[in-house]
Image (cartoon, rainbow, N blue to C red; front, side, top):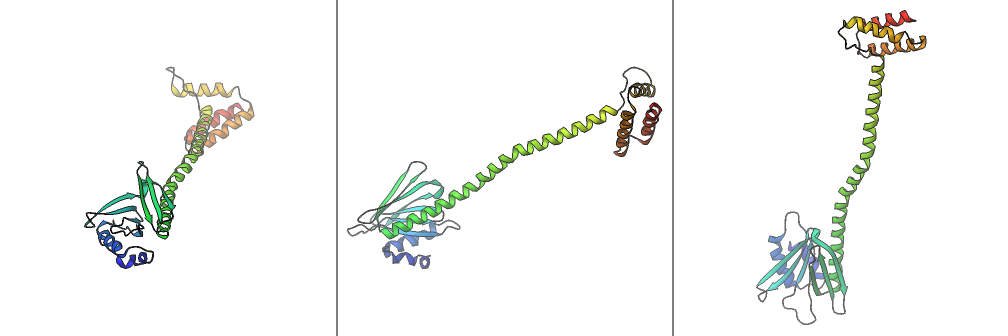
Length: 235
């Protein structure tokens, strides 16, 4: 941990403050959490117990020494809680602040300018990563919603085609009488009555339809032969 944070000591950070913070961060960091930068407060007068800002790939941690430096308070905010970050450069150092989605305002002043710039840059990068991560599922949802009407139209078209096909079959199937006459007799009489009013072209077309029903397995060979015999007798 300390070896990875030595680079921060080249940008006016207080070595003692960095040492105290890093010694405690070992127990604070979560799994797969990495420190991106540490900025240490530097007031015009001697700063005995400076506040610090630690930014990681998961959150912002505010470190504030208490009890004459014997203890330290840590306040953290995850990146998805952050509404926005701000940096203001003053004559003596810079002020880094951020606001949360719950309207909490946090500000640390007298941050050396180069440290404040790096903190602000890192924070912006993390917020952009979070924004892109949440935008991807939303875009996928929009694409799926756009496809719904197309799928509905396709389903309706298939249903309509199936209905038309069944209707065509129904037109050429014999009508079954509801009276108490023998089935074969009433069916034959009904078909003969229907066929008698058809032209030869219509009878030929009807014979072709019966052949399609036979080929599709919807009627038996014997039924087809009977229908064929009746139609040929009318032609």
